[in-house]
Image 1: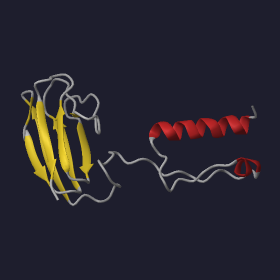
Image 2: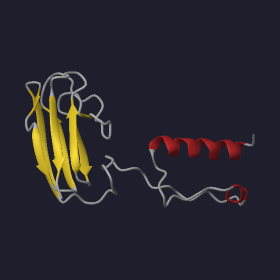
Image 3: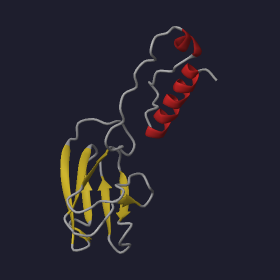
Image 4: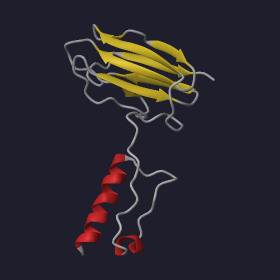
Length: 142
């Protein structure tokens, strides 16, 4: 395999892992590689992936703290396009993990934040991976 093909293959694989592929993505062809020109740049993924839509400026923001091994607002109702920001105020690790795995903060240490923009109506129960009794629900109406 030629170095150029190998590099292009690695770039495409990395892009797939990062979730950069979208309907409007640029496709790199063999003609692009033989032209000597660099392939079109892909846009960077958003910090949080919205449920059911594209990333846009949030219409509102809701903040939820994790303290005392509970979510400060266990049941929140929001409009589509609202950004929810979770902050771990505990000295122990927590996570924000959707029951359907549509979003996941990963491990959050004390002081860490995680944000997510909800763009479609629905009910989104979530929990902490480290504390299974630590549960809450986001309801998106609209």
